Image (cartoon, rainbow, N blue to C red; front, side, top):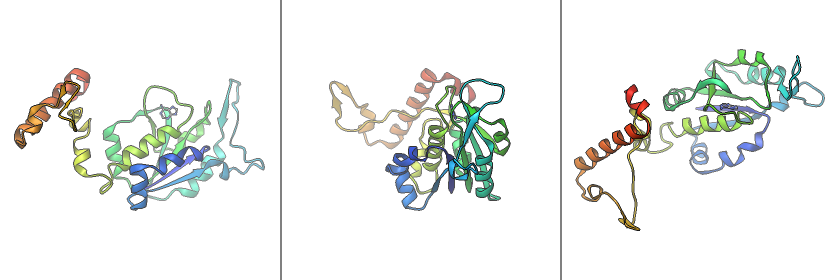
Length: 222
Ligand code: ADE
C-alpha cells in the first residue's frame, strides 16, 4: 500500500513517521508513505500557495494550481484521491477497513481558512475525522494513515484488530495486566481461571454491556 500525502507543512509528519508501529511498518515495507510539499509544485516565482479569497472575508485560500499539478503528477490508475475537510463524510472503522484494501491513496490536506472550491473536483472522496474544525488537514491525514496502516496484513497481529472496538459495532472488552490486586481494584477472577470458554463468554458479555452503556447507538445498528 502506498500513501502519498500533499501538505504545506511536511515537518508535521516527522514524529509520526518515525515512531512505533508506523515506523516499523515502513521499515518492513508493509506501507510506503510519501510526504509531498505542495509548495514545490507552485509555478509562482515566490512559491506562493495561497491568496486572498474573492468577494472578501478573512483568511487565505489555498490556490488550485499547485494542488492540481501535484495530484496530476502523482496520480496513477490505482490511486484514490482523498480530500481532508470538515465538510466530508465522517470517518469510521468500516471506512478504515475499506481503505486498507486500496493499492494507493493520495491525501490532500486543506489549510488556513479554506481551499479553492475547484480543488474538490480532484477528490474521489472527501473525509472528515469528526465534527470539529482543525487548523488544517494534516492531523486528519495522520489519523487516516494510522488507522489504515495498522489494518494492513502483517503490521500488527491480526488478533489485535479482530477484537478492536467498533468491530461488529461493539466496543472492546476491558483488559488487565499485573498486579492482580492494585489498590483494592481486582482483576476479574475468570481471567485468572485459565478456562478459555468462560473467558470468551465473559469478554463477549462485557463487550456488549459496555457498548449498551456507552454507545447504545451502536447496539441499535447491529
Ligand atoms: N480539516 C479541518 N478540520 C478537519 C476535520 N474535522 N476533518 C478532516 N479535515 C479537517
